[in-house]
Length: 623
Image (cartoon, rainbow, N blue to C red):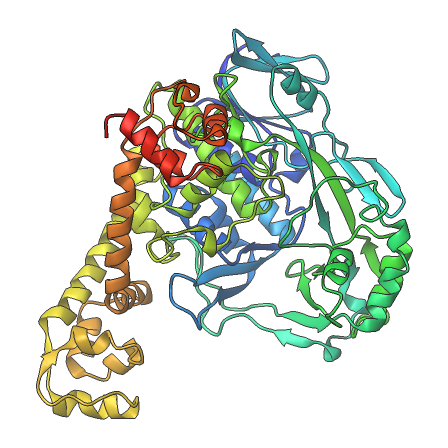
């Protein structure tokens, strides 16, 4: 049936698998995407939204490199919000509410229109390994498919076990069976594995809710979009979300079911996501709080199904129902399905290289929840990087990695392979030490040239980025070169309670003041004329404003990143034996031998490796 040898086989078609397959195929590799159900490609298993704090930056980075998540987020959006606008631009994070059905459909259409990509529906039950190298996969029907590389993106399906109260059953997602065979084989090959937990809230009938008792949460007045390409457009019409709260009565009703909760009676032994806890976990950990927010999110333009964000639970369905009916606006709620928890296998990501290729098996890549992460965006970015590197390996080209100062994707992967994770890993802006450089607005400047160089980002995308960069740089230079007289600027300064000017000065200095905005500067005739004459769009204007206002911070962070890159350039020989460095601590030697860092910089970030240990290493390396 499958006579040809594929360059890349991707197992699983969630967010990681879809990005991996698209990247590999778009880079010219003959690719096969195998999944248990082709109807569920890129399904939003949990909340119907993309982006958010730090996650929005990741989606923009995926888009800048030539991935599809940003485009699909735009075409399927029903609401757009830029979060954290009251803070500095390093914290601004785009987020869309999505039409769940349209999101999956748009992904499938994009994949079906991608050259070099084949599809097959079946469960992969094992890998074909020869001399520590992957050479193909086996399916549950006994079919073997040969490949030069394989990317595993199994999500929550590896030995998945679903819990609802005192009931549990095998499954990778509601209504879908678990995947078996792969974990056992990988453990036999020498991999370490573990178990993690995640959960999802009930889905309810929106017709049974009383929105008048809730707080409306509309989208932005002037919505933006994710993709840097002009093939997608900002929303004109939007759908609102709503917010309501739990109460002491709701908490008491939930507590009645604790003895039947798999979280508290010992049936669930694995760790769930710290920053997205279940409702029972929240009222147990934060017993002093008498209410918690619930976000009521529509699942699409035309469906009545609603997602109850904040009410993730594995309590018995009767307890869920009774407690939710005591929430304001939910008095007559009807369930589409109850919430549940799911336990699944993962593989500690310290077993991977920066390319996401495993250290034990040549040509085998892991991406997504198999690496211990949580979230569509984290999964998609790993899939993209694994697909890129699998393709580059087949083409015998240099591997592609991103550093911590180049992208949130670089921070994510470095955190995973250097520090590992014992609970579902979620990205936050606080994890990135260079977040002033890694903003959502400049992801194209940072990454599109790199995406173009490896053959993923199109020439059209590169040219659009270069035009935007040139226009914003020229606008910043205009402010540096052009002076303004006191009589023209002082009325504007006075209206903003900003100190007045006594003599002419460059506009850059005025614009750099924290309380002066581009709208203020446009009241200066020469500024408005420049914008009109050069036909500058909002993206260019916003980019120039950020460059002016944060130039000092950006320059300082660039200098810090340059210092770090010196340590990144000091390579450590492969299979270096740290046990011979007797002046180094025992813990450091053990950790370094296990993780085998590639550079001195990576070694310095490993938990248990002190600055003095790094000094010993530098001395040994002749530095």
